[in-house]
Length: 95
Image (tube, rainbow, N blue to C red):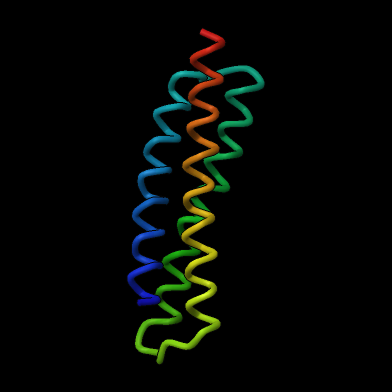
């Protein structure tokens, strides 16, 4: 169960990275472009953390702390999607 949640979170983060780069192409310069670059760097680090957590927990018996960690990471991935949707809507308003 833990590995499945981490895998789902990683897939969401991979989609977020792709979606973020699409948004970056819409606002390539200025303050918004700079902030999107910083946001994409943080998203990439967050996505890589899924791989690290997955590698560290693979083959270990599932316990409640790992389940809680994987749920928190999954909810973090959902939060990233919500933030990117907000950025998309703001960019749409500014255009």
